[in-house]
Length: 189
Image 1 (tube, rainbow, N blue to C red):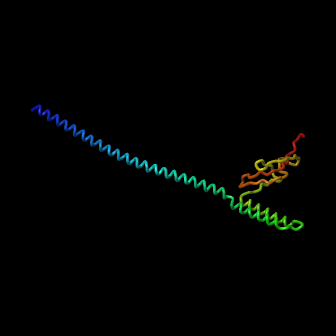
Image 2 (tube, one colour):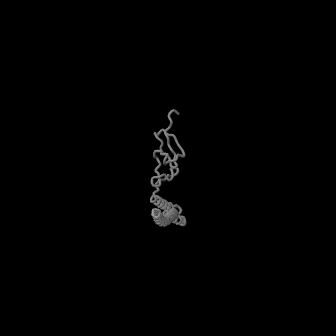
Image 3 (cartoon, rainbow, N blue to C red):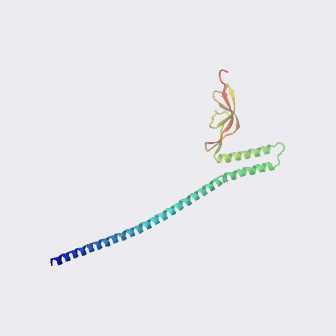
């Protein structure tokens, strides 16, 4: 009987071990199933995020292309209003040249002066201002000296003659004035 009891105990232990192993296997299968489910969920989230990323990338690329196109169009047509006004000046020159002028040419001169004023008004409206040079102090930022002359009458370099007007565009140099500078005579000559 002792042997029988031992055998029965051993079998019970085996059954308990088997049950314990089966429970562990079931528990591991359950965990594996949960992990697989979690992996599927993470893959789905990854795909969604990747899709969102690609869509945003495409949106950004489309925005960049649109901005480049608009910028190109802006540069292409930015001067259109200015050019329309200049075309009016061209029309006036054509009219002046097509009309015969009297012998003294006074009417022609007056017409050209009006056109000149019209052109200056257009430039002023666009932000272009002439640089005042005659009898002003020489400033190399705005004046380009083409000639110089020494004189006892000046103490610092001044503009004696303006060969070509200079212009500013909104206080920025567009073209320097080409000038003749009168400089003080050097002592000791």
